[in-house]
Length: 127
Image (tube, rainbow, N blue to C red; front, side):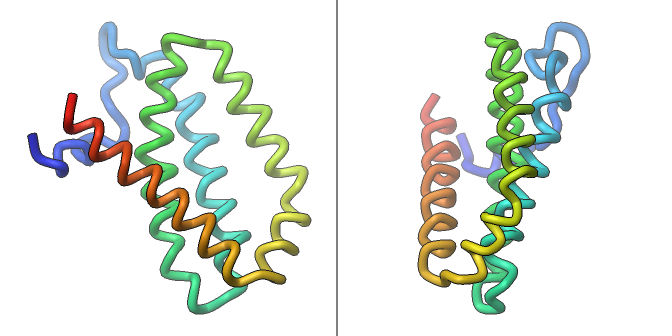
């Protein structure tokens, strides 16, 4: 199976008995936006880190999709997603200050997100 098949449907069908049907977008959208927001707060203050925002967008889109499907089997996790998004919004000034005052740590955090994302793509193709 090709690694590109993982990227076929960033928003899977919510028809019939699809595991994305519930909670689907209710979990996916907050995770996607939280990922973009976190990447923006950490990487945007440094022009050399701005290209790394692509990692945050892709990880938020596809890992958010996978987590939303997982939330179908454990609906309580939707509340966890919402609480994490609310915490991120509340801590945004502190995260922004951290991102602006460091260069290496936001890059290292982004690298960690990229490693998790690549591992997910790799192991999803093994199944």
